[in-house]
Length: 254
Ligand code: HPA
Image (cartoon, rainbow, N blue to C red):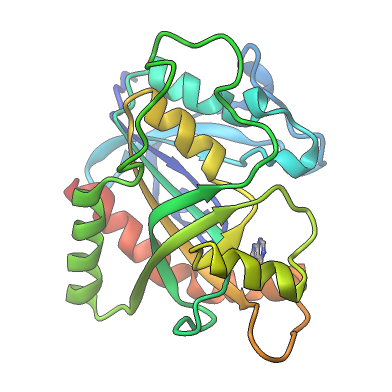
């Protein structure tokens, strides 16, 4: 089989189901790829899947690396370097996040318009890779045309979407009530523990990015509410069909 995908997908929270829709697959476990980080968690081995989705050659990353797991930023973003070397031009990412915008509801899908990077280490720190400039521009980290396309698709399908700025933090704690409030004051609409490092490296490689976040919990309002991983997982699973539908359509039309 030969394949030359221009499109990559990180199957983050809320998108796992999409993996089963990929046909003509060829899979590479991370452990078989030189220098690829390997998950230490049993049953979360992770793999790159090459195949077809929506009539397109694609590659998908099943299992991503989070900074809170102990990986350094070079490891977290290594898969994006591999995507670049393979000729990827567009990257689709998903994640789960806590909503701080009072207009948001649990289960909403947020089109990521921009991000605020609050990770303690920068993925581009160190010797500059020749894929991009030393001081990369970030004025449109999330491609405007793709965001507009997502709006069109959501409208056609009658799916409610919201827009906002994603605040990327290291975790693994969820936020205290005042942290949620602070991130909202800073201009954030949702907060989560992934995506930002990968998007920064994708931008540095000239890869266009589209990001969709499922709002799994809410924080920063009058009465503090408890947040649990189970609740996040449950809300993400419930939103999965909407998320999958938008992403599938985005991939086939972009
Ligand atoms: N905070 C950080 N990360 C998250 C949250 C949150 O509230 N929800 C899902 N991921």
